[in-house]
Length: 292
Image (cartoon, rainbow, N blue to C red; front, side):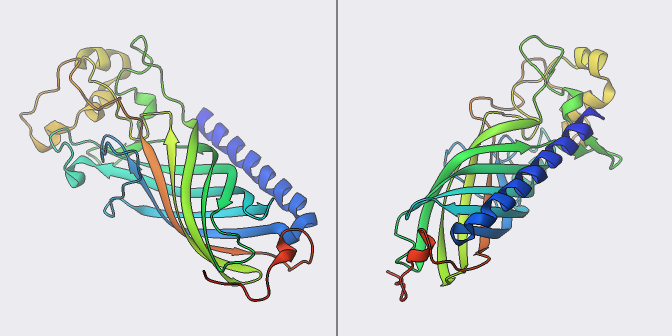
């Protein structure tokens, strides 16, 4: 009930922020662009583990992502931007081959609100091709779940599969978090009011629990006493593929907490202005923009 209430409040605040942004930007429409983003979301973590800090994609686990954005031209090569993205991420030990004997899997929806600044490598008022970099701050919501043997959807955070909330130093992870976004893209100016682009962005998170896997197994009987049989069943699922597999001893690595989980978006964007004005940065466009 509390998670549902928080999600409703999150969406209400998001809609309020977007409404204020649209209202405020109406007076500066010559400098304001609205965008639609369509692409994929992906993740890196214990179930698709990569040590590189650069985005790495697994097409098998990529899932649909969509979003809306707004950009305000502050200077000739600097813009302020805000995007709201929705997507899903997930992975399965059986499919990725990371640890088939562990046999864990997860999926989660992602709600991502990002605010930041964008820097164009070339003056967008002079060139049709507009490469750029961006960073800022992201606020996101996730809630990992899996399916039990009977096919029932089960949310994992309340179970405390690694002893969160019952072992000192292992607090329940928060489902609303902050991340640092960074990315790059390129846009092509189709007309004064329309741009089409490609963008790749990543989120450096401060949690290792996007997939509900991070540290070590806890004692089976201790977990059963405090969290019940379902927590034990979903903390280790190797016995589903090998009936003779024993529940790992307490302290056995279940994940690797040395590197936090991350998620990525790869999207095609369509950006437009409501009208063409003659003032400010936007009004300085050359009549014959160049590609290079």
